[in-house]
Length: 477
Image 1 (cartoon, rainbow, N blue to C red):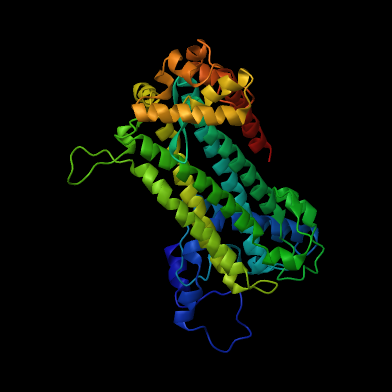
Image 2: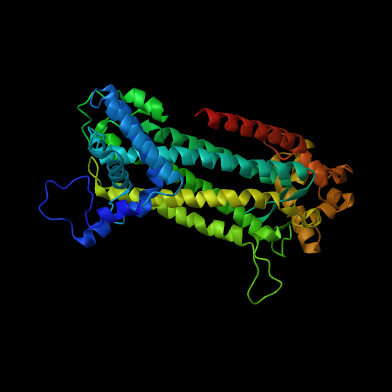
């Protein structure tokens, strides 16, 4: 391999050049080179090239002997990549050039037949789509692991209640499990968005050529099936110019990161001394260089920060594409850094959050203490009055006056005696005290989707079924 590299040094291999009298300036070569970025597409480019060879064989462009040599050469290159023995040349313009050059070194001029009827325009986007398809499946699997961790915490903490918040103010009591499962619902929608992006990417552009299609009788449907695409592109110009699938993917990741940022924010708040609702495992926190007592929620903070990085990738793609005429333009070389970075960011976030969630330790005592103030059962008082026949608006107004009275007394409304309630209205009976109970409040909200323990158990069962469904579905696509 070293000898091969030395032999080609100074003799730059290009997929074009006959039209030009001068070589590109060295600064131009460095400016346009994408090898370090798109090297991760190597195995996908080989898959696309193998399919291209099949198509050329069926079209009668190459004979069985040539086909065999090409496939054996591609297989050898694939092994070199998998065993990390492939030698890169910094002069190679991109990974596609590097692979074709290496194929020529192995099998000679037969390698030059492989590109018949194919352009780098459809070659590149074919490899790019194959990469995105694999990464989306991996992302969904990792997200399902996060959901399983949430489900396990919901089961393990089913009896614990805590204040629910709106406007970051105490609102009503909810089960901790109900709160955690809210994120599982968000992640269900993320999975659906990722599946949408998957099907957007599962369109085969190979056979579109530079923009007009190929004049050879390539059986595109057969190649799509061979490569695992769901369909073939319907318009050759759109096929090489389309990066909607990339934006769909990064959009789905952006929303996913937004959800993780919200989860991160709550974990950060809940782990403060002021809340004390949760303790993070030591292995997923860091300390301070000056304050020995500190236990910082750095994973959650970095996740919150990395969401902006992914948003930037989406804006990058949208801005890159907004002014491009058909068909292919070199601007689109900038699509891959944005997609790669978004995918890499999502991968590490998903990988770190599964064990982090599993390691969370919730402080039921602090949550119970927090339930004792903030007038969390005020709505239950209004609901009690409604059950006595009072219109809700009047019940709301009367309850507000009772809360004001409690606030001035410096007590929680749930601690008031029956006589105090009766002084406000004869609608109150002695059983008002029974209504002022956290567990009763939680379990009274037993509509589908509510926080009652019965409904939360149903939600856990639905989540488990969803996870199994998605696991089965991802194996089929």
